[in-house]
Image (tube, rainbow, N blue to C red):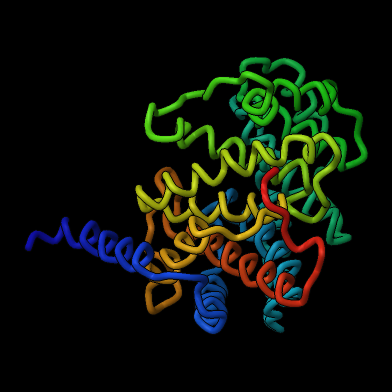
Length: 333
């Protein structure tokens, strides 16, 4: 057998396991997968050489997510120290990166710098070159009108959360972004594939997930009234994305969709249970998922982070349901 077909056959086998398994996954299996995922993450810290600045920002963000989710389902005493070390590395990297000229920075680059500053601020740490980061991001937001609406919204929200007045209103930018466009009455799919259920283009799902995360401070805040009013439509869209991601075997996209559904308080369904079975079936012995994310210096790390967080969130929500928490989940209206 040609070596190039082995990953495809392995994915097909995992898909068969996921679709053939009835009911929710065993709690013990989910918790064991979370531990293995955290083991991999702790053993592979991001650095300038392994992942670069973007991975350093993601790492600090995911430790914040892990600590929040883990407190409700599966605490790990190693996470606080690991978070602190990640913030140390991020501070050093921010000192190096933030002072470079911004002539060729994209708005997405400014977003990552702002997110790094915000994560340090949330942890009560000083922000190297804070003034430069904020002023350059505000200037870029004001003039780069052709940037992706999701990124423009992200920059405005982070400026506001850092105590600044963004040059453009986050409320106005929210109305121009993907959530608003796709949940308006009579809205037609954007970038649809024409497949069953009007599936959207994977990039549109990416935008939806990130807008939900940004509008709720990455799950730390409950959805506000604006987001709640669109909740049912969003959950239905996201569940369609889960089916698409399962069919394509896209681990990080699948995990991000599950996390977004968790933020919205969606109940588990047969579709999401099958998705979690797939995550369990495709995890490697070393705790990684081995899925390669294009255009990343370390092509594995993001899949491990997102899949581990999705499994933590699944465990958290199921535990809340078992304890009878009224807010644990609500079906899409």
